[in-house]
Image (cartoon, rainbow, N blue to C red; front, side, top):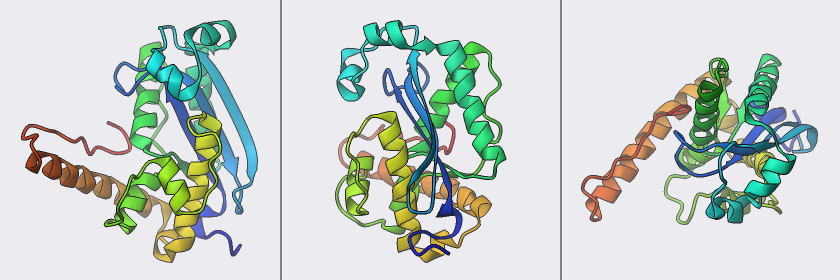
Length: 232
């Protein structure tokens, strides 16, 4: 086994979306990346999309990912076409037996599912085994202080992230963080993918319940945290 990786982390599909907002029920895809990385985190395959979401891109979103409404309309693919292509690309890597890494996967996969429904496409089947470094990191290093953003996780695990909020940069960095977690926690690396997927369902549910309890104990008695994973 390559000393720089372990178990299921030898070869990973990586996936990320940048969108028009944070509400999974209404936001639209603006950019997407589906790729494959090898044992050392090297990029073996990559496919990118710039999408015309069919709606105005809020300024707040543009400030994060850099894509304006004007650029998306001028250069982007039609959403109905791009969404089908993104689903097909993910189905292809899944059919090849690769786990799909997505940081905060419940967001990206739910947005994709809502977009599929919006345009009448069949959703991504399964979904296949998903590796969510956010959920796993919170489970294996529960009491670490500080933020759990991708930028923070990359810094903690020694992964370079040069262009945060670019779908390609974020997708690859998330895959490399997953590999770093596999190296740091051999018991996670040794867990079969199907079992790891099931564990993440429970971990995410428990993490949401803990966060909800904390928020309610700190002045927000009606706060609700959703713990469904990998789809909401």
